[in-house]
Image 1: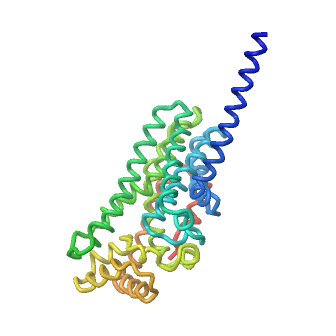
Image 2: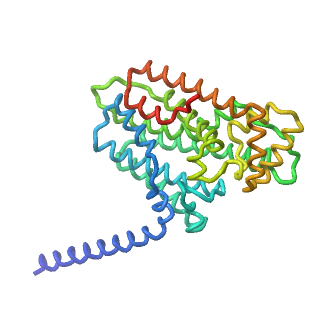
Image 3: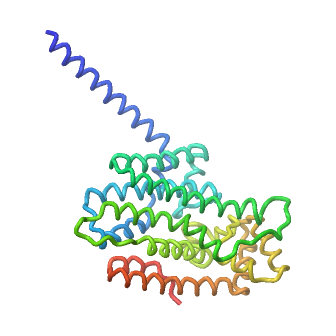
Length: 329
């Protein structure tokens, strides 16, 4: 009789646990809605394609690639929710930004939950080194993002302040975006290297990941100001509305006369959605040669990336992925 009662007790406890888990899942679906909304948007899955291409060198097994994909999705889409809040963006992939639908507080919480869920994915692998890599690169990412925000909100465009403040150099900008954007690619390369097939050579893709991230960000800066596709999905020259210190803007600010510099700073500081204002900013960037210089910079970066791929060994998958990104002359 006691054995029967014990079995019934265990059965009852299991039912309670299942019900508790069901209720928790229902709650998660509610408070993670901003993240799920962005996750469900149709993107290009560029980071997944990069991971598949990197795997040419590492031959990570399918089970490990599954959780690596999960890690990428959590970090990337969580960061998109936060980016849209910090940039006051209205559109994400042609749809209203998550925080406009669900509010800023819930959106921040959902994105932070995604970051910690990504950490949980690594903890389940029982790899202290993977957690260390994750922490290092997430700190780099937030350092880079923080400096970009600081330059924008507290340096050049600080309210009621002298506009002739310190302008970041091109090298400083590249250093910051390497932490902010390259960091995600470097994290991917380092984690995959940990799980590589034992029969594969120990290839270090850190430098390639660094260069790819820098190219990706400067390309994004350029396309935001010149691409119809970006206009359709994010709005016309959204970076100007944000007042972003993008690569072309920094080049112009370091090159033009004080009079033009003051005018450009004033226009960007206004963070206007006016097409007239945006066209004036574009005119300055064109007349100063900033957009042309940005395109030339991308061409030089492309050469460096192609040489790095060649030095690592031919990888047709990666070459095909990068082919979709090259900005042609």
